Picture 1 (cartoon, rainbow, N blue to C red):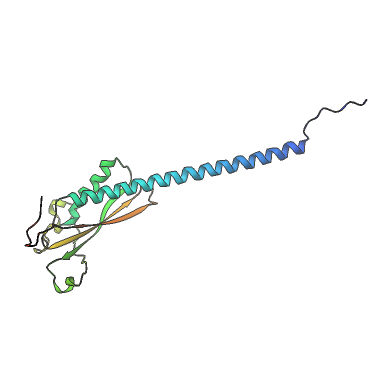
Picture 2 (cartoon, helix red, strand yellow):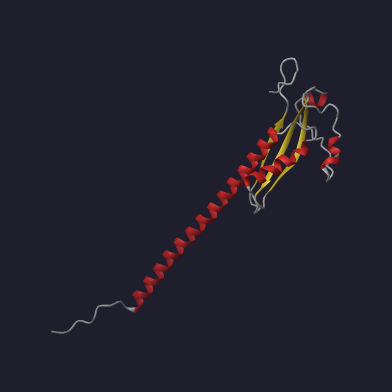
Length: 174
C-alpha cells in the first residue's frame, strides 16, 4: 500500500490566507481609527457647546452694563469654569434695540452702535454710551462665538439682555 504524503498547505494557500488576513486586519484598524476620530470630534463639539452655554448663562446672569463688550469677562469665565484649554470664546457683535421707539428702530431693527473698545476696559470708549442706553429703555443683543482648540468647530449664540419692567415701567428686580 502506498504511503500518503503528510497533509500540509501549499505555498499558494499560505500566501492567499496571509493576504486575506491582512485585508481583514486593515479594515478593522481603519474602522477603529474612524471611530477614534469621530469620538474626538464629538468630544470637542460637546466641549464647545458646554462653553457656549456657560458663556451665555454668565452673560445672562451678569448685571446689565451700558457697554456690552465689558461682558467679555463673563464669557472668559465660562472657559475657566470648565477648565477648557486652547479654545476661544469672544463677543463678536453687539447690537441695540431702543424700546423708546425712535423712527428707524420702531420698525424692529437692531442697530450695531458699539465703538471698538480701548485695550484697557477701564478707559473703554464704549463706556461713553448714549444716555438713552439704559436697562429700562434698551435691549442689548450680544453675539458670542466659541471656537474649539483645533479650530475645526465654531458655534455662535445670541444673548438678549434687558431689565423686565412692570406695567408702570418700574424695573421688576427681585
